[in-house]
Image 1 (cartoon, rainbow, N blue to C red):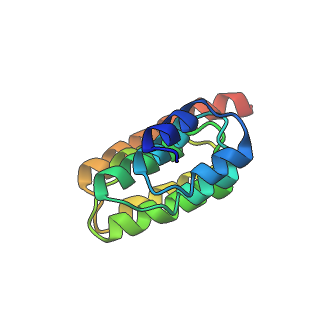
Image 2: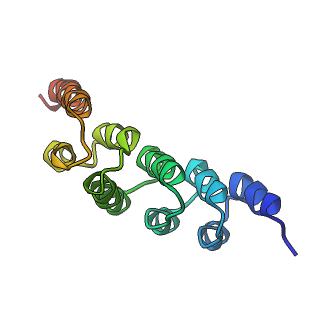
Length: 145
């Protein structure tokens, strides 16, 4: 019978998409976070993880890791936005995930900026979010010309 340590080791080392997807259904938040750092985790497993919930700290960390994952496609990122918005509206503070989402070019600035309008968003978060989105626009603009 596999132990939680076995699941964790697999989550870090595995490269097979179907195995990683099955691991996303395990009940251990530390395994979810390991999957969110594994560059081989497929978008379908990342999408499943975006709906996983455990505790405020673990959830906020998982959402940040998903927002930073190189394989997260627009569908995964939209799901992370929805999860972050719900947490902000509930008064939680997944600020690192908000700022990580601001760095993703797959998302429009307006869809990320709206996160600053939720109840849990502080003035400091809105300021940092604006700064991140503005620097992203400046970096992208010269390349478009």
